[in-house]
Image 1 (cartoon, rainbow, N blue to C red):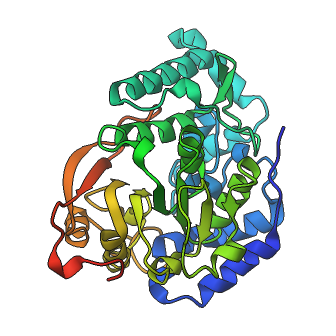
Image 2: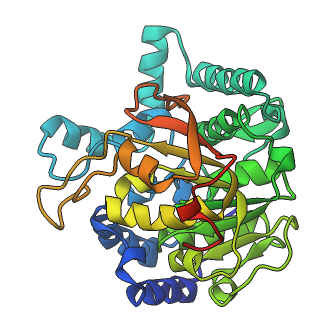
Amino acid sequence: MNQIEDDFELLDLMLNDTSTAPVEYQPTNYWANYEKLLIPELKKMGLKDFRRRKNSVLSSFGATDLLPITGYINHLPIWGIKSKSWLLFKYLSKIKFIDSFFYRISSEYTGISIEDLNRLCYEFARLYGIKTGAKPLENLEVSDFGNPESLFSIKNKKYTLSILNYYIQYAYCCQFIDFNKINSFAEIGSGSGKQIEVIKKLHPNIDFYLFDIPPQEYVCEQYLKALFPDSVISYRGARKISKIENKNNGYIYIFPTWKISDIKNFNYDLFWNSGSFQEMEPEIVLNYLNFVNNQTNKGIFLNETMDGKEVAAKVGNHGVLNPTKMSHYTKGLKNFNLIDQSNTILVTNMNKPSSFTFWEKNAQPSLSHTGSQP
């Protein structure tokens, strides 16, 4: 099975840069808590088999690809929970062969096997792509770098359940924008890079500008370098770029978060944020949106909890200090119209309290929000 190389010098460079960055580009309360767990895990265990690592904070930004039962257990809240039942499930999830045990019971009770579930999820995503005019799911095959646990094959092509969710996000946007006419794509909060994997494999000529905090961005770069070794502009070089001369070459730029403010004449066709703005405080989000509002040429996709994420009891506890809500996105995106808001769609969980939204550039942008920089 293909593995991802470790590069701890790169991780340390990212962490050192971020520690000296302006506060609005550093981890917020929500992610500062995860960082305390994630950095020691990466330093101790590296990236070997990271996509099948149970009870790992890597799952918090979509890096793992676990089988459904232990995947659900892994996503149970881990902050301040005292439930004996939860602790029992966490213990059981570590036992060898527990997955096959659960699946056998489930299959005999319901008549539905894990293979049936995989096929149903695949067909749901495939049909959704047809409905929205997306490139066919059959054109996509997921990488096995990092040894994903939930890997399965259909028509001799490999998929995971999580990659189907990233395909659905892409397919949703195909209703509102033609990816064949996009030259550039920017994402804040690129996570493990699997959204980029999906879109680049279907539209290889798009340039991608990725912004995130470490150590998430470290995982993202190492993963994407393994998949697209000739396309990734590493953080080491990207952190020094002041202007992007050529576009539509299919490059993937790994930028620190603050570079969004100082690249000259910076613009891109589509902006993307899935689940990370909701984990920041409003003033941090509005700072980013000030740039996004001016730099984006065509459209914006957001997947957020529009009523706001859970609020921390105090600084240092899990949660946001102040929730970011729809009113903040509307305030920050004055050059854009909200043209659709739909319930978030996932193949394994249809009850998430979040929304897909797509925003289209106004024909006549506000005079107070024009130009490539705020």
